[in-house]
Image (tube, rainbow, N blue to C red; front, side, top):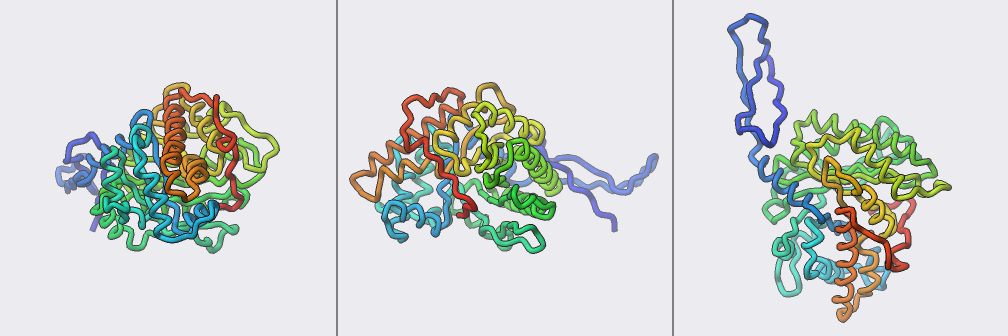
Length: 388
């Protein structure tokens, strides 16, 4: 029996997308017609993606695993307990006025189901602040057999049922991070595995009402020049979009979380924000369809100020997409150092978060100035072989 090909959905199309005949020969009046309906969440996905990609706002990434959150807490002398993790995440998610600069927050599963010490669900804290709750859904990196000491991301097993539960809990977007290493090649196997895994995750997420953030991180590790990073990034994103299309993912209902195109962290010459913006936008314009609503950059170990300066440089002229941020360490570094685990310093730490969030909001609008930045904001946070 002949099988039909699926019709690619368009968010603005009617519920009846169209018809496609199978084995129809020219001049033949005998044909079989197949009709494909749009997904039940399509309109909601497009609306959610546009909300997250709203002017002057970006994403706060606090989806560190419990182990990684423990490393952050230990840096200020705190034990890795659920109580301490809850206290820190409560500090972040209850910051007054945060929704002016932050449109979405990526949570770890523990945080999605947690509440404040007063009993208010964290997802409700976010909703009340006009911030969309998101959830990390991948299960982390493991060695990729047959590769050049590279990794692949696990977590597709059971993803559909988990995503349905996350949606019920209030999550409206998801994140899946895989990585590509330039010093390791990267091998064709690793690039294909990363792209295919991201595409399957994206399709499953959309099928369960979650906007997928697509994140193939090109690691900063290495001493290569910026031209090499551009070459690898173009190759990776070409593969990613090929498989997204193969999996019938609706581009209007996704967000991207790319690395900026920079030299390797150990390269002898640093690149200016203007150069990084030029190379990064070149890559995006060559590889990313304008149907994608938002590009939410990761900071990847850059200093708080570097990440903001680079984002600002990319917004000096109009782009086909909302070009913004999805930062973790580049929003939280000064916050942690200010808080130090002391209840009496929560307000000061929240003010520090607002300072960083506002700076990146201005950068999204192309209006940021580094004048008056603290020395802490200038300190790089690159860690070779970083995992979380």
